[in-house]
Image (tube, rainbow, N blue to C red; front, side, top):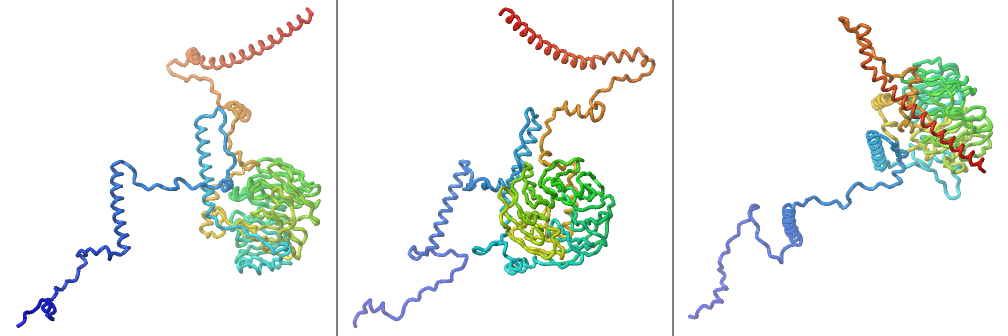
Length: 589
């Protein structure tokens, strides 16, 4: 029988059963895989773990050495502000510390300068949050922009912007004066034959409409959209937004033109009798009544920078007025004929005038000098300046808009032009909108002028989208922050300057004004005592005890005057001695 070989044994079909591996549970540790089978992601994870271990060791070493663990900023400090942006919000020159000022005054000036610089920087930083840009009108190649009609512009722009061009045909009661509210939402129109209407011109919602049954010379919104003033034939009337008459101010008669000062709550009126009057609408009292002695006042404008009123006169002069003085602050001879219209820009730097000599002139109010002038064939009957510096001039039935007029650049060809049917009687730009309102004999026209309005508004001052509640809160704050009329002047910066007049000079002025010295001490009067201690002799003894105090002041003043006389006499003696020496030398010769 042959022996069984080991090969045969290994090849038997009966094999040992391998032990079945149990499934691994999630709490059990997994076996380590071979390095060859590792994925690159796992390798990166392990490398990160090793790196974390090394950073932990480094942090522990830094803690032991006392070093800080905070990461260093690669760009430390605040971001730099461009110099052009800072100059845009510059608040005038720095205040100089007067010589011999006390420490308290120096500290106050330093604190105010630091606050002004901080406000300038913050305004320059937050300027980035104003993304809106002003528009403009650009024609095709070799195309002049003043040949583009309003219908073409309305068709080219979107539906909302195109609806801003419209006409109100009111031929029965014209010509019309107009005024936009400070927020730019509401329009007030007044026809010469008595028609007055208040409209939300964007939604075309009519708020009130009435006929006052007499001549209307001018209309003007007051501090809110809830009240407006109408200068009628005889007196000045104030109505609310529903057309209800609130006041009839009979002190203001024959009013021709009006201007409202929003921060002072003053309504300034110019009358046919030559009177300039101021009405405080917050308390309903007349603040000032000035007789200009310059005849009929039918040309009027205000300087928004310092609230000074500009009046144009038939003799070609323009005068500047404040309610604090009975005389004009400045008188300027602007034209050879009567002044027809004038306008002042919002910065209070430039003034534009037009006269019967058919000239259009631009003046620098800071120096009271003309910058340039141009000749208009038909002259300009109405002028208006937009928030962005565009000038509109009405010549007969045509409105011409000029660009880059303010400054040293001469007046060039018009930027835009529009022809109307009736004689133009009033022009006004809508705030924060590229719209020019035109009042004429046939009604009212709203004209699209790209680039006229300021694209960004201050919501705390004039918010076009404010609600009824916000308007009420703004009105209360505005009344609390109301500026008194005594502060109106040519240079509003004088209020922040230090009065360097000496104490003695102010003391003398005070004595002259009052008629007595308020700082002078009263003579000593002994108090009456009982039990015979108030006899004549006892009173005299008590007076002698304090007499040396009055004598000390008297002696000091007398000594000062004596020293002055001695020095004066010694000076003349010296001059006499030198004169005698000269005479002796002449005789010896």
